[in-house]
Every structure is written in C-alpha cells, then in structure tokens.
Image (tube, rainbow, N blue to C red):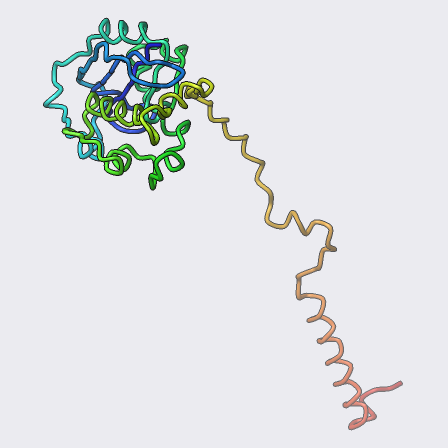
Length: 247
C-alpha cells in the first residue's frame, strides 16, 4: 500500500487562508504490520499567497510575503504523488485537507487518515499530548527544521513507524490504516438570515388604553370652592346684619 504523508504551512488558520508551503512524502507500507518498506519520493514547494500572511503564522513558520514573492507550486508534481497514493495521512487531516484542497480541489474525494484523532498516542507511548512537537520530543525524534512542511512529514513518518515494544510488534501506522476513513468536513457557507422587518412604533400610552380617562382640568374643583366661599360669606352676613337679608 502506498501512503502519502501531507503537511502544509499557511497564511493562517481560517477557511479563507491559503497554503504557502506544501510537503509530501510518498512511502510504501506493509498494511497489516504497518511497517515501512521504502520511501518512494517526496515534494516540497512554496507559493506566494493572494491573502496576507498573519503575524502569528509568520512567527510559526518564518515565511514572509517577500520570501515567497513570485513562487508557485508545482501542481503537476503534487497531483502525481496524491494520485499515486492509496491513502493520505496528516497530523490534523481536517486542516491539511482543506489547505491542500485549495491547490487540488478534488482532494476531498481521496481516502484520508488523521494521526491526531485516530492514533492513541497516550495509550501507545504514554505521551502527554498529541502535538507533533511534544511527540517528537517524547520519542526523541530529531527535527532539523520544525514547522517546515517536508521536515514535518519526515518527522511524522518516523513517529508512525515506531514499533510499540518489540521490533516485531505493530506500529501506529498499522493501527491507523486499520481505522475507517477519516472524512474531512468541507466548509459550507451558510447564508446569514436577513433581519425581520421592524415592528410598527407603539405609542407610549398604548399599554394603558384600557384605563379610564381622567379629566385633568382644574376648572371643576376651583368653581366648587368659589361657591362654598360665597355661601359662607352670606351666612356670616346674615348672622351679623339680619336686616340685610329678607328671607
């Protein structure tokens, strides 16, 4: 069985980002035991992206727009290795499949395995986590140029072909190939629903329309007070000067 180990370096981590370098290592594997029979060929290339390279990405792989100016991937060489492979393996297949798909759009139809999600590194080697840097340090695998795509492929190859115990025991590659195909999710653009039409304006007193209306004029109470005052004056005058009023 022929397996292509894939790694990419990119402008960033979002679906809109692009690969700036691609590494491929094509190997022949004894599928049942998962042992390496031979390395067939490899590829490393870089390309000037059409989107800016994020600062965090440059800090990781060291590639800048100036370094990549005018460079282009050899798409025919990439396709030749991919087509020759029965299975593609990546340490984080979800991400690398998406990035490789920007160069070869039909890459999603290939068979994939993910060495992050489908290999039990902690069980096999008591590794503290599944990061490539951690695994290489834990298993003492030398990486001359970390975060260089082809060097990452070579390091992953050494990890996957490590024997678990005796030399005649299986390798992580053997267990990985025995797993079912890993199907990378294809990013789907979901349209954002338009906002509903605004509701008609509600008058401030609309919620109180059920309450009875109260007369706010002060004419009624004032008139009553005047009448009372006049009656009291007349009554007082009648007591003081009884002749003024003829009842």
